[in-house]
Amino acid sequence: MKIEDLGYNSFFEESRNQLGLSDFPVARIISEHKGAYKVKDVDGEYLAKITGKQIFEAKSREDYPAVGDWVAITRLDNDHAVIQGALERSTVIKRKHGDKNRSGEKDKVQIIAANIDVAFVVESLDRDYSLNRFERYIAIAENGGVKPAIILNKVDLIPKEELDERLLQLESRLAGIDVILTSTVSDEGLDELKRYIAKGKTYCFLGSSGVGKSSLINKLLGSEAAKTGKISSYSDRGKHTTTSRQMYIIDNGGIVIDNPGIREVGMTDSGGVDTVFDEIADLSGKCKFSDCTHTREPGCAVIKAVESGELDEAQYANYMDLKNEADYYEMDDYEKREKDRQFGKFMKKAKKELKDYGNKY
Image (cartoon, rainbow, N blue to C red; front, top):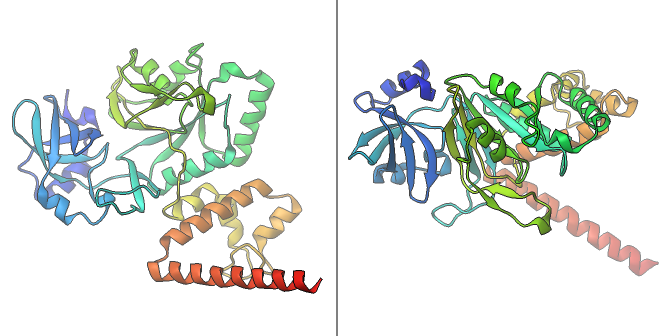
């Protein structure tokens, strides 16, 4: 095995030199554990920890290494290493969330995976299939510079007519995105999926719990290496769920990352939204006002397209939700407090008017 087989290239080598880490060997983070990481290089795998200096200098969770990152290490023995520093990320998939970080405070951003070439957005056809969810996942992939692709899993569970209808919906809402149809029961589409995955490239599987991400990876690996944990059938959330992020190398040399199911995918930037909704972005240039919010302004080309039926109303609604979410995240703390204060005043006034109306009549 060569280091390039793990995804290393000139981009990371340049970063290594610029950071003054050229005297250290490099390894890739393949999993994250409480207080430690599993890293892999051409010689083996090591349990590694970051230095106290890195912990001290980290301003947020984004500053900590994540699965997929390249790091410079010092090997302590055949099983342990110290991470001296992380190289610059070429791409990153991240989401806004409200989980608490190591200091007990709420982190704004969680890194899902780093240095990804393609993000497979997986949905199963027997449960909570959603075009809106596809757009949300694809937006966070595009925002991080990652190419998205769609996997429609468990195609054996619905009639062909219904499948054809879903494919037409995808073509209408997400034209140009590659779609792969799979089933781990009948093995349909698995050969196509294997051919899609290239040696030395990294692929991240994204989706809700129970859609079959780990089962697909196990099929690619030809083993049950991708560990899953059972989840309640009462919640109708599938039979298994991945419990941690993990990187694997399949037989053809492709690199795949399994992820736990994600219930909520919060937007951190509006760039990916505009890329996914390129039709709306193009229409925005025809609006009367350059700062049009596409809600109530006269001369809004987006609203006009919705009213005429040229633009799908559900797609417009999802765009507005994601755009507002991303715009809110990008505000500084003062702007957020002011927006929340104005909304509070509006609600207080509305309640008072409603109460006065009730007293009057």
